[in-house]
Length: 437
Image (tube, rainbow, N blue to C red; front, side, top):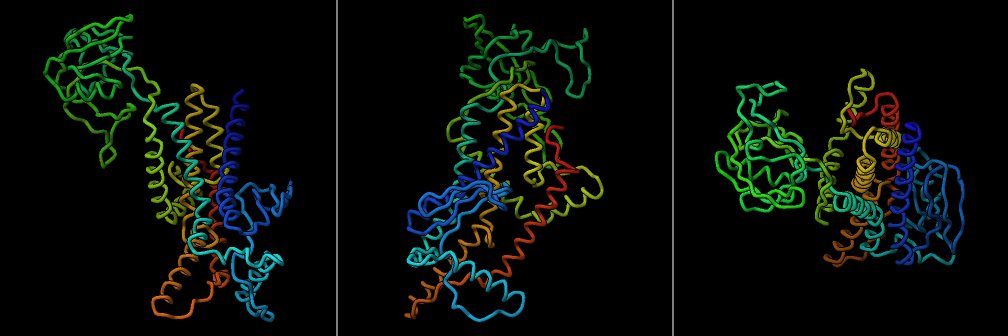
């Protein structure tokens, strides 16, 4: 059964990745067609063709290696001038790129080419793919936090501590000298549901905790629901040093990574954990936080790749926040699906992985280097700047930017991307990230 769950987790992530890639390309395809560009192919994957079907002027299909996708637009760059044979490696690469580009321009459709679109339309086409991934991330995160909810302490009491022991104590039982906890003195029982504290309604345990921690030594009116009826109690928090926790019950750490300990009001009661649904805006907020985190990772990518290489060679523990290959993401998905946890918990983690993957696709594709979408945006914007400059100084309109001149740089970037993918693949096979430890 565990093997089936593991395989199921991998399949979930592969299907999710395939849909994410497919919709990314739809984000390019739809505006391109709306703007009249001739699109010859819409393909998911690379390598040998597995299946395809031509609908109208566009061939739709799948290829063997599910490592990405593409659409083939007519005339990504200006047509070449049919110069003679090229000499030198770089000139040959440029000439080959121009020849391949020329082949996409169909006879009779010379005006339906990408490079002749206004600059803003080209930017829209190229940003359509990454923005589709961003939208998917927002939708998935919204389903996760507003549909399923965030696991937090609820207002239902799970336990009541019988006595008060020092924060640094390791005792597991009360002694005769230990004073009774305020919760026990007040008559709070497991199963009680908190309704209000000090006249303030509470909907989460975090809200109740904030009121209690802010009122050491003060008598507070407490209303609980017990067996369907509300019961009024009185509770007086004592001052005690306790580790400060967040809404999920996890310790808050200081800049040194140590738990934050403060003297706060304490009563000695614990809550049941449950999924608390968040406002609809929480999904977009969580997406923005992930975008910031992934952008920081991209900035420090060379250092992180170096650390991955070192840990791979030395066998050291890998940073849980390090980048992953498709194999690494699939492996994590399988491990999550096979863990001994409630089904809803596992499904929530899988959704979080898929949403984070779409955020990564969004941020990574915005890197302003060809062959990534961000590189095409930069080329279009540069042409726009040249046109504005010419208009300001009353000069003739400049010729379209010939991005095939950047093919040597594009090849270098492609080689680096392949090298990065190979490193991550080997690291994910032999020194994988363990987020379940």
